[in-house]
Image (cartoon, rainbow, N blue to C red; front, side):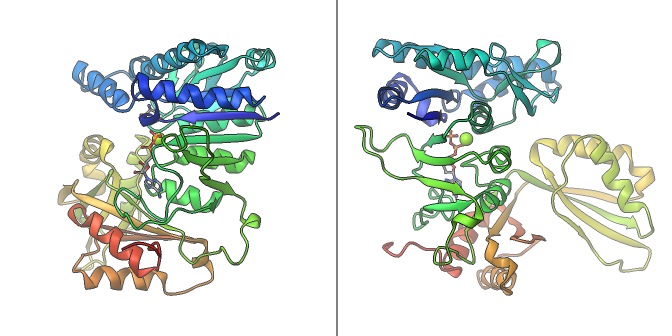
Length: 416
Ligand code: ADP
Ligand code: ASP
Ligand code: MG
């Protein structure tokens, strides 16, 4: 007998037919004698629909009420899955975030899980009942409902697995594992049998949305055994292997690759401030007010001063925070002393990730040369120990990912 968490994403829960198929899969695990907690997402597209309602209600909506609205999608699917399980003879009960409870920070819209009370859950599992838990939601001070940021059900599942000391956390989605890049963009992408926590963390943080970044960080910290699998394959009970997220010590030398994968992110916007005074403190005058407004700046380029008096500064912020960033920067204009503010949302960040970079030179050079040969201009660059990212024009995203995938020898061998 094992204790397992099964998480099903939006496409897996999209409509009653899919939910019935999920119920059958849960039933198989329960009937094999396992204790099962299921974490579910809202139906595909539902969270977007609810977010849009908030925007329609008011452009400056209250984050507390946003959470009340957008957490509703998961409430619906958890109830429906419990009903579908009961209909096929499986004892099941849903547990809202506030009922367990799943305690979070007060950061409405992107709250962090702080503690999960498993008393009621343990009692339910011990009695042979399947527990169905809506992902993405928790409860903060004053018993207000919170949500964990987009894609947050992955984090709910991993946190649940850690709290209930589960043997496994199986993340079922619409692809059958983690690939060398998004398989919807590059059909020649290769499925990885195993990937290290560290590489997955980096891939997720630069846009591989197959797992929410926080879920990987948490899995690494709590040593949760996470597997990414398809909820569409093996509907009749087979077990097609997915991708296992493992510690670096579990990867043997044969498996170790220079580059693990390539990711893209179209969710950043570029801002350029021209003729910023070239003196101590002017860069701080730009980024301090942005930090105070909780806006995450990612890439930063400061050009050399042409005249010796001023310099251009370019950086990226999340697209969703662009309007607020402009407001904040205009507010600090006198202190910064820039001439003009330009912004561009038609940009895309392409990142190459691999632990092999630590010991091999030339990864960045290959990236720049490959993009250059295709006439793709690089607007900004950032690097970390195991990652190189470049900012390019959005229209070239797919082409860039494809040519880099080939350049690093990642294409599947049997591909045409
Ligand atoms: P869910 O609703 O199940 O949480 P998501 O849409 O959040 O699913 O994540 C799955 C999607 O992630 C896939 O459909 C795929 O397009 C995308 N994806 C991006 N990068 C990768 C990658 N490296 N490997 C697998 N899938 C990826
Ligand atoms: N439903 C939420 C979202 O779409 C959470 C999730 O699916 O992980 O962001
Ligand atoms: Mg997701």
